[in-house]
Length: 113
Length: 109
Image (spheres, one colour):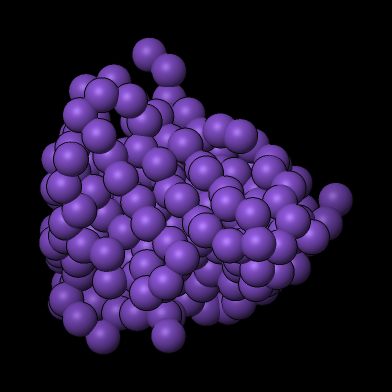
């Protein structure tokens, strides 16, 4: 049973381009969480999704960021018109249910040049 | 701002020494998770605590949740270089999980 898969592991984008980060949850998991870890900082919650629904997006920046978790396929975190400050490690986690253990992916390290 | 306060922020210990990391919340914790992040890698689940007074151990790592369920401690006995990394506590907030800023542990051989 594969763990949470994130890809790409490393992503380099020029300022103004779009970044798409993918997260495939563990088999049987329908809850996905996205976190951002800025250099030298802890994890910060961004968004919580359950299949096809956004449950809590209180941690998402108001502009340029969006997330989806379609019925089929991975969850996608999309960052439009990236800026240098978007450079960070983005982690996703998945769980079976709301109050169950979450498993994390290896993260995607985004570098904006 | 972080909802969970971890202390210390960083810790350097000599191999073989014991150490404790604390995680404090201003709200009651309904589920407290400890994770470890190795440098440059993803997060590894260590333990989950739910009941006040609960204590769990895994190899040389012991975690406790106090009776009031507002503080947890992670204790490592006889630390080894393999214990080095960032330790994060996470709180179940119902709809999502929130994390502390992490404690960066360095173990000197």
